[in-house]
Image 1: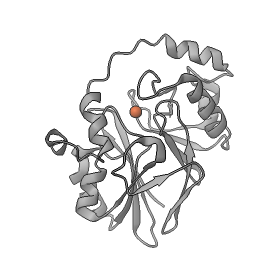
Image 2 (image 1 turned 60 degrees about the vertical axis):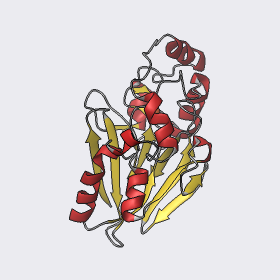
Image 3 (image 1 turned 180 degrees about the vertical axis):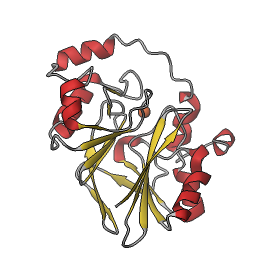
Image 4 (image 1 turned 30 degrees about the vertical axis):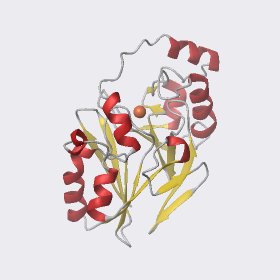
Length: 235
Ligand code: FE2
């Protein structure tokens, strides 16, 4: 498999490129609109054809490049059915397996940060979006967030994966790039070491995070696959 972990520094977002060496088909997970030219150049360099852009959820902090990429190369935008993004080409639900070339990703519904959050499991790794972060998790105080639901999602859908499964998150703010399910089960500050559901809910309630900077522009834009307004096209 061809694999690249790409980083957008302004919002500390990770985007993942997956490519099938046999068929040259490719998938991008969680693109950022301002990086579209970079993705297209990379796809060209690696001689890959972009088939799908996958969202782990409707983002509040950055605008997706899914709509722009669809216009440029005809890729199909994929989101969960509950994400509230009717612009998408494919609405997925828990257990759906997405295939292109020899790439195969299983959708796991992991709500709690938002109601339409999914993680994508692929062979030895899982792309967790903002559900499970390295040492932490996504916030649960807006966008239908629900701490109890996030605890259930992570413990039932992610912590049941083989312990050596690699965890690739949607963001990291400290420069961490990858973790494992075992590491998060043992050391995650909010969920690790056998924390109970009630303890987790109490931790999340006490966070008192500031209102996200870009949410008012990013949410409507992302519900339109990143093509929702003039400011969006400039990234
Ligand atoms: Fe998010």
